[in-house]
Amino acid sequence: MNKISIVVLDFGSQYTQLIAKTLRNLGYYAIIVPYNSSIDEIKKLQPKGIILSGGPASVYEKDAYKIDKELFEISLPILGICYGMQLIVDSFGGEVMLSNHHEYGKTTINRLLEDTLLLDIPPTQTVWMSHSDVVTKLPDDFVVLASSKNSPYAMIKNEEKNIYAIQFHAEVTHSLYGKKILQNFAKHICKCEKNWTMGSFAKQSIQNIKQIVGQDKVLCGVSGGVDSSVVATMLHEAIGENLVAVFVDNGLLRANEVVDVQNMFKQLGINLITVDASSMFLDKLKDITDPEKKRKIIGETFIEVFSNEAKKHDNIKFLAQGTLYTDIIESLSTKGPSKTIKSHHNVGGLPSWMKFELIEPLKEVFKDEARQIGLELGLPAYMINRHPFPGPGLAIRIMGAVDKLGLNILRQSDTVLLEELKSSGWYDKTWQAFAVLLNVHSVGVMGDNRTYDNTICIRVVNAIDGMTATYAKIPHDILEVISRRIINEVDGINRVVYDISSKPPATIEWE
View 1 (tube, rainbow, N blue to C red):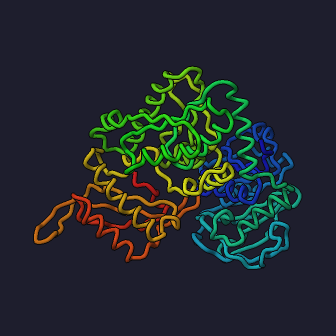
View 2: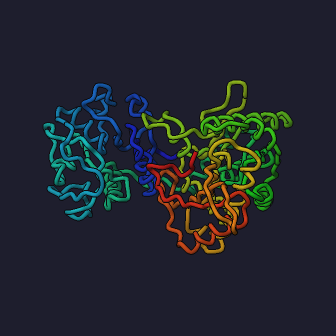
View 3: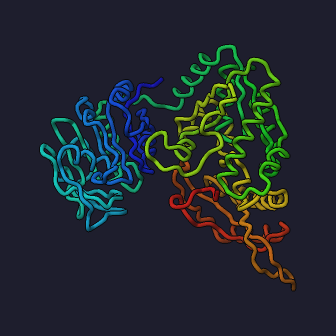
């Protein structure tokens, strides 16, 4: 595998993954590990440098996240970001206090000293602050590199120990030269060499699959989405006919999805087994309204279906999934103290009764990286550019209980939306688009008659990896056509609304 360039210690910031992702985009292999990883664990990774992420805590709180101070003695360059900076200051005897002037949003900082970290960066730059604490006393042997109006110590450095710290978030796009700061840290301070490309990752992953699987068989659950299609293609290249690709019709799919997926895999030359388990899923979901229960039931039922299918084949030892890094971050807190956002049906391991070993080749990559891998493997563009579709399917796009009537209404509405976006050229300009059945009734008028029907919400967003998103500014005339068609063509709908919230604070999906 690639040698690790930078280890990012996660202290719970929702931006932590952006640090690793930005470095990877620059060509440096970065991974995220929990903040409380032992010194020995970190040393085994043999990084060239360490970054301490931001986080929601305050260093002066009783239960604040702390680290072994031996970390500062292992002779590696260190960069602290936001909470990471405050932790460095606290560890070296400085002071951090709650500020009277909080800084949230864009701020201007001014360079006070020349330094390698600021190489090829203007003396004044715009950065993104997000903190209520401030450094009030600098530790001994630290100097100030830059300051802002409310943060006199916006960037600091300990020359002797090669430790840097910044109060702002260099990893977000709002910090105009943030990417350059991270590049300077990796290239010039840590002396990292560029060693991360999707082509090399794909080749190494395929070789790893060959070595792990040998002559055994792998059952791969596919959905037709980018992630599982990429995994199936990697497996097919690695083990050929020993791949058992299974597509489950769970009754929660979009219109024509089964036929579309079957045709896609024919083009890839991969044999696909289709299992109709729609009655099984819908029976188990009857009267279930809690979204987390929906997700859990769907996940468990997928496992049950895969297990039943596996019994029909000999020598299946492995189960492969298209799990992404974003799935893991949003589902679990195993990488650090980040808060659980929602569970994913393909995260959390297998039940004890299921004796397969998991293969998840994409579990350390982001969505846009998965797309790049797909292109490297020769997948057609129309597959790579398909909008994401959640594993639980339409079940989490129906507010409340799931039934055939609601699914039918939602499928028809979703079909209208996608048809209009594709015909207008907006489908390829956006990350994800879908309809949500709100199960909220309101009064309407059709002809001369009063109606009391349901509401459809349209959700269209722009994103890169799904960790953050903004609503797409679809022209009003296109939205008007979508609304008119849904109301005219879908029985039971008399109102269409458009979701203009961003992620965060909202999520992309409604449940």
